[in-house]
Length: 125
Image 1 (cartoon, helix red, strand yellow):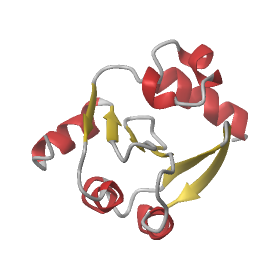
Image 2 (image 1 turned 90 degrees about the vertical axis):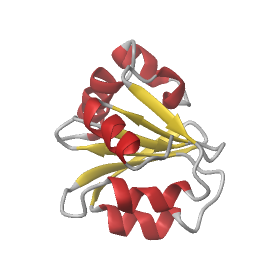
Image 3 (image 1 turned 30 degrees about the vertical axis):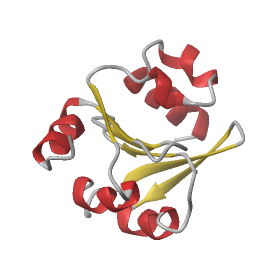
């Protein structure tokens, strides 16, 4: 599936106004409910606790208003983001069931019933 089609699918699934909101640099300001945000000491460490290690996901990095899409497993992306600060990224279920984001404020945001429940179960709130 091409990047634009994936972007549209993600926007339709997780942004309040769908594709119209995908023009914004900070998608996390436009996430659909249910959504939860937490401020863990090390947000990237939460990826390994929240995202199933055997699930292939989309990984989207925001870079100055441009978005870069990758596919893979969370442990690979964790190695990258754990070394970066004030960096925004999204991890998205390929089934479009949930989305996780770390924004430039080191806030971890989750959208979708499954991931909101997982965040609550882990007691990050």
